[in-house]
Image (cartoon, rainbow, N blue to C red; front, side, top):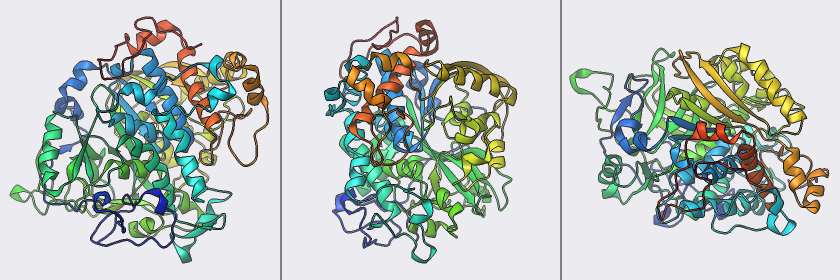
Length: 614
């Protein structure tokens, strides 16, 4: 039976070993470690299946009535970008918590690197106060002395970022996916192993080193687990009843935080730069492709989602009356190969060996070969046709090529207000976003240069992602560039008509209100820094590490980030949101501050008068 890719049972201490041995039995890649860390083989279960798109909307609003009752029609979309996306995305969430409005947000979408903070916050166990996750941040630029920049902020997610992926990968010689040249890490004759800085390199090591240190401190790196709705919900009860006999644990969504959506890209057909991808969502309630590709070559793709404890199975052997299509809300009998845990989905969203390798002369010929190269794959099937030829073991990779900011996932849910945090690694004052960003595709304006190392052509990306009229693009970019050149926070407020796009499942004919922020170097922030820190922000970058410099926050997606620059980028992102819009705009957009209940991370709040950080 095929393995499903990411080795979740090994702590990263074994991640870089070329001699790792995997057991069979259909596991995602199990190796010799304690039984408690192994994936759990599936048993027959009866998950619900929801057909999507649907006039009734997405199932979470019915399944989790408190979600709609206690939140606004408001989403947060955070762009990916490797470790940088995780750092900047966390900074944006810090700002929302500082404003006291995070509880008002209904959805948060994490893609690739930004899934790293979205996942642990969305599934934060109740024993950890939300206050602990965010710690004392943000402190504002005046406090960022040399000593404070090295404050590990122990017990917060920031400490996981400081001491996690960069440190862990550096210790194990797993320097980066790209190093100097992606081709350096791939070899058709020796798939899955190469040398990096003189040490054996396996792409599994990248995902393991990335995910483990960010989920494990919060007791979320559990191989034998499934996702579910909050404790006490019907979703949670169904998951416990379904997997309880196996000893599999249930990882519930945290109450009083936004509903987390982790986005990956599902490969439909591999053909180098013409590879076909579609979105795949992982949520507490369900996983799947909520887009109608019923007319795809070979048979239906997507058209619905499966309850999370039933993910990773073959389609039902049969349906009543000889039907081939599952009805909306119907329970089906399936047997997952193994139960699919949260770390697998986070690793799938953040990892991209397939999307990188296709353009470097080493195109995987199958999902199994992609797995051998370190990628992730999962058995998937379409609720529209249990006999579709597109059902089967399929590659799941970096969510960016389908929805780089998670914006489309929120537009599918018709969120009327969406805050978008970009995490690009360039100064928009100097770079054309069309060549440096995939989000230009939302206006149909992405250019070929932005996809130089990815297995997708730009025409497909623009066609599959465009939801706004191109005529709104240039005025928007002009405003961002003007602010960047003036040393102001690079932000924008937009109200745009939404265009229908069946490729991404977005309905048209309505208006969305956006607040948009970009990585930037506001003069007011830099001037407020202590003098010694300010001088560091004006110096040229070093050669071997990513540290505070005149390129902060425009740093690489991968590599060894110092504690200092990680803290600086968190503070910059939070400051940009808090200071980039008038207080009245923030209040009108995010609603009034909602103090957390005792045990949920009480903190002094700006309440109904959002204020800026010093």
